Amino acid sequence: DALSTIILFLQNYPLYIRSIPTENELKFHYMVHTSLDVVDEKISAMGKALVDQRELYLGLLYPTEDYKVYGYVTNSKVKFVMVVDSSNTALRDNEIRSMFRKLHNSYTDVMCNPFYNPGDRIQSRAFDGMVTSMMIQVC
Amino acid sequence: MADEALFLLLHNEMVSGVYKSAEQGEVENGRCITKLENMGFRVGQGLIERFTKDTARFKDELDIMKFICKDFWTTVFKKQIDNLRTNHQGIYVLQDNKFRLLTQMSAGKQYLEHASKYLAFTCGLIRGGLSNLGIKSIVTAEVSSMPA
Image (tube, rainbow over all chains, first blue to last red; front, top):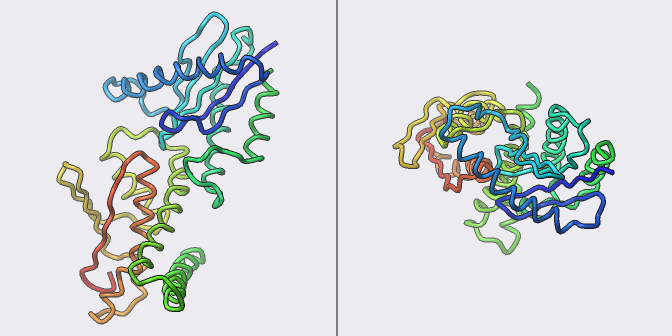
């Protein structure tokens, strides 16, 4: 029974949080907050190393025994973090990449909505719908 | 191209619209420029989100400024910035020898003082774009001669 959580951060406060199933949410939130440190580490490492720094996708941030955490940062400094169950081995890197692209595309649409104030929590039905269909695919 | 003319005309109408509503009401003249600049700011935020969606991550500030001069300017004004200078301490000068929003106006000194109204939106555009990329900035513009 696979679980997953998706959170978007702007400068370390959350813009959007979604978990399936919804119990034990607090545990996921805690995990995601610690993974933010890993995201920051990776970004500053990129500044110095000659590693492929051109990619927006950060890959696996850190695996725990039960879960895997993936990260992605846009050029506008918005961080996307995704937590999936380790038992879900069917999920490949490419699929995670494309999920992040979809998130990024929908986030861009939200940004261009004149009724949306940058920095507010995201309350768009279209965005929710996209996230729901994505999470259902994963579970 | 049709869409270029559309933006130009819309922009001109926007400027005169803001000033007309100022005449009728409460708002003093200085606020008009601020209003136009704020409009540009919000548009810039949304635009930059769309444009940087597929580009690679920016290495540093200079990379971002080059992006503004080349890709961003080309997409908005169909040409690149002609000259970029910097003192490497945070000041960048972007020079456009044929600024699209002003080419329609007659040459000569008479309208020079009004040029700033037509630059406010673009200043906001740049400031909004930079702010979403993580750079706080102040953007000012000046015109040396019309049409410029």
